[in-house]
Image (tube, rainbow, N blue to C red):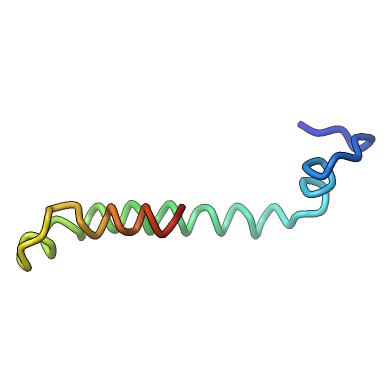
Amino acid sequence: MQSRLDKSPVATWWWTIDRWFLAAFLSLMGLGIVLSFAASPAVAERIGLDSFHFATRQIIFTV
C-alpha cells in the first residue's frame, strides 16, 4: 500500500483514482475474457477457425 506522504506519480494516481470504477472496469474485462472462452470454440469451429481464435483476439484487444 502507498503512503499518503509519498508524492510519486504512482502514489498520487492511487490516491486519486475511483477504486470502485477501477474494480468494475477490471471485472468487466475479466468477465469478457471468461465469456469469450466459453463461446469461442463452438463458433470458431463452425466457421473453420482455430477453436480459441476469438478468445485469443479478446485477450489481445484487452491488453
